[in-house]
Amino acid sequence: MILLVISIILSITAGLVLGYFIAKGQIEKVLRKKGEDAKSIVERAKKEAEEIVSRAKRDAENIAKREREKVDIQYAKARRDLERFKKELQDKEYQVERKAELILRKEEELKIREKEISEKERVLKAKMEKVDQVLNEGIRRLEEISGMTREQAKKELMRSIETEARLEGAQLIHRIREEAKQNAHKEATKIIITAMQRLASQVSSESSVTVIPLSSDEMKGRIIGREGRNIRTFESLTGVEVIVDDTPGAVILSSFDPERREIARIAMERLIADGRIHPARIEEVVKRTEEEFHEYIRIIGEETILELGLRGMHPELLRYIGKLKFRTSFGQNLLLHSKEVAQLAGIIAGELDLEVEIAKRAALLHDIGKVADPSYEGPHALVGAQIAKRYGESDLVANAIASHHEDVEPISPYGPLVAAADAISGSRPGARRETVEAYIKRIEKLEEIASSFDGVEKAYALQAGRELRIMVQAERISDAEAFELSRMIAKKIEEELKFPGQIKVTVIREVRAISYAR
Image (cartoon, rainbow, N blue to C red; front, side, top):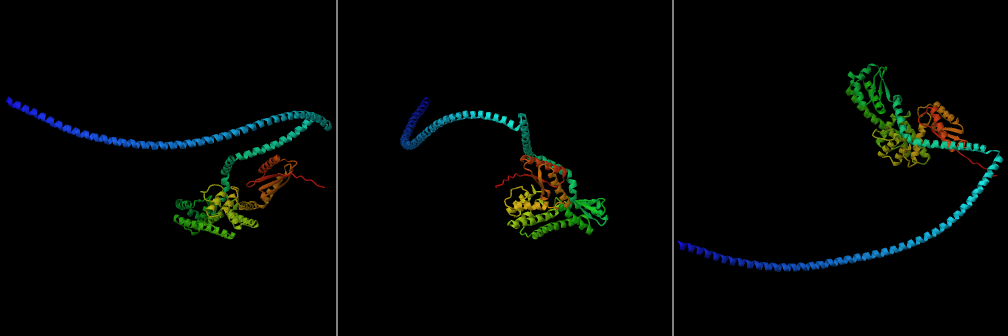
């Protein structure tokens, strides 16, 4: 048993020793192989390091070369800049030296001038003393010659000063008035709006209603209809108020739009003549009447341009011309007024060798802004110019329309020409609901008021009483007093006369110097 154990131990020991030597051999073999691999790696690393060092040297040499070239270029530029700076510095030094020399010469000249001025002051002082002596002697002799004492001369001087003060006061009033004009627009607008609100109803009632005659009062009930359905339908379709009251044999149509009122008038007369009055019939008649009315106003436009010998006008402009027939201004029918202005403008253009057709077109269209749609805003002259330009009229025509009330500057003679024709048409006697007798009395009263002022030599009422031209005596009225005189005359006219629009008061002071050679 012991031997068996000893043999096993020996066997194990022998196996361990043999395994050790075998493992050692394998490890040494592996180590040799690893050493060889490491050696080859080191050799390759050395070669790669040598190549890297070689490339780095070449790169460093190239970089150094480029940097040297850059430094050389910068050095050359810096040297050129330095040379230019040195040259500029030399030029400035030369200029400074020149200026210094000029300053020295100026100082010498100033010293000489100071001496001359001092000498002149001394001479002037001596002359002033002599003048004072002569003046005192002259005053004494004047008192002896004129027989006036110093107090009397002072009073005369005060009168002269008072006259000058009056003149300065008139000039001051004129300046204050001009400043007030500049600041018065806002207040004037407020006053005008207030006046319009107070007087609108009584002034516009004449031109805002139409009376429809009835064959019998029984027709009023049919117009009203059951529970008022007929009258409500008619009002909603036409936009016109129907007034059915105790007026015998008539109903009243009320509207501030003359076109709507005209459509309502025609429709109402047709319904009354037909006798069938109910909502469906009312709607049918009103619709047909509107279509016929729009065609009617276009036909009016065509007839108007044919009458004036014009051609080639846009259909929309013909519609605006036709609408003029149903509008008035200062009691004048706008279509008749526009035709009259066009005829006058054509005559004037012919006399001035201008294009008659351009003058007539501008004059005929000059008031279409008054019948424009509410979407347009601004003075009617500018609105009319926009409409004319929009529908193909030339720049000359559009500008003549825009400038006929001086809202813009005219670019041709047609603007002043249309303005002149418009003024002639509007200012002639009888044009704006004024009888010849009233017109003559107003003209005479204007001239009488102007002639009542002291210093007025002659007074003339021009442009149908819209301008008063006054000639004054130049020796009695100064320029500044002329402004005050025009203001006083205008104020007296406002107090004593009632007139439409405005009256321009022009005071003319003329000085004539006349000599005779013999």
